[in-house]
Image 1 (cartoon, rainbow, N blue to C red):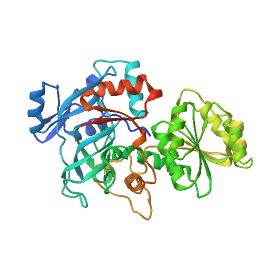
Image 2 (image 1 turned 135 degrees about the vertical axis):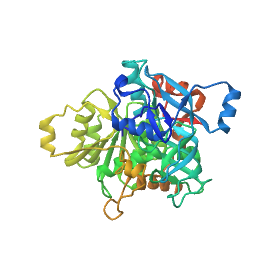
Image 3 (image 1 turned 180 degrees about the horizontal axis):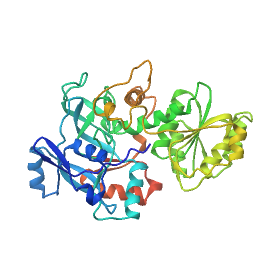
Length: 400
């Protein structure tokens, strides 16, 4: 699920962009420099309110960065360049990823380096289109959209984002912009369920009920799988239960319960959606699956696996990475090249559309997952909320 953060810091020279600072000083790879240059943005310090108002008229927008010491800063940047297979979306709301982004912050705070370039952050947002590239069909200025940003198709916590046409979904009537801010994370959840390779009537156990785990559990439940979700926090169990998901505290004997409800067979798939430095979540998942069952690693946990148990179950272990085929591929995300429908049925773009369909048909809900909302100017407070009070925090939105 790691979406990654891309270093920003460029200047335009004639018809090309040159990454700053140089490789000799910071060791930035050529490939990363190309991605940085693609964004074509120049970072500016935030001035006073009057300057900010004038800047908006001149194509200057606010963007959130993580600095070299792990602090959250809001800076002003030039509105990104529009490319032929992309759109410019004026952001309404963006959703903080409580997994990917907080790990990036904590990693920098653990090893601070004031000379390290700032990194942009965020990948899931909603907004209204202001411009579309000449090769974009089916999208027009004024459309309300949900977006999934990426290193090769910039989009995240910024006032205006350049999004590849494959990663932008037009919103049907009835889907609110706050809900659509979950688009990127929703695509990740759907890909995780697909990786579990479940069929109708099978049993799925979801370990971990953060925002992503909540979405996965709701999608499994909506599809009709026999779904059980677990977490140590009672508050998260209650939120999932209120959405119709069967829940059980992780403090209880979950493997025994799973055995009971499956007539001693075990779950068909266990999706591990936790952040842990222990191998216990994976080994507990092994205890819960049936012979030939599947474990899907969606979160981040140590994987020192009990080989004898793994062998005895003849289990399948797979990783779910982001929102599906096309992720991290510039030809798909930036250049707009799609994959043949008959051969790659569920690309990341099609997964995003499916998530929006579930919202539009009210098969799932996300409004109850929003626990906090901050103006983008207070992004630092929003991140501290996520980092310091995780027990009371799920979906945190930035408003623009």
